Image (cartoon, rainbow, N blue to C red; front, side):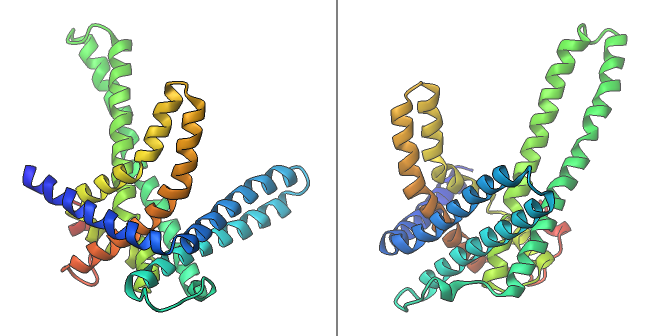
Length: 275
């Protein structure tokens, strides 16, 4: 186990080093795409606030437009980073990295699959609470448990914690699907299956990478908790201009590394790659 954690740490360090090298050489291009995504998300919120009482139909269409624009920029960012990884010396414009209409449609359909997977796991785990309730009542009746209320609260918290953990693991396992759509031009459901396949056995590495990339936000939360607003503000600014672009590059580099080491079936099935 210790050797596995060491190997995982070294793998994460390699990803971070390569991602940092790419980001520093092409910072303004990457940061521009990240900034455009931020502006799009912010403009969407402001637009929804101003026109919510004007027309629901108009509000709905504006939401669709902003979602499409945001996803297009997101896919363009991944496509641009792929170009930097594969052909860094060859010039490419941001316009040249725009995804095709087919890739956007596949991404939207895969996103629905992604949400469906999360909801499915939630539906499977939710009935656990109803199963625990009669069990707990029986334990109280036979005298094994003294306080139904106190024990019920603890069991509920444990069940909710297990549910959240399961949802997080599911999210992490299938969240690489956009890369397959952009990089391999595969179909929506196939991208979900391939994401499950390449993350099998690499969960620890991906988790460590996310912890490293999320370190800036954790520090920001710490300073907020300590009531140091100015320091927290500075950390948040640095995180926005450094960690966010670095995270996009690092996740793309991690995908390319993990996908390159994948030796499994080109058309994997879901059941053999869940665990």
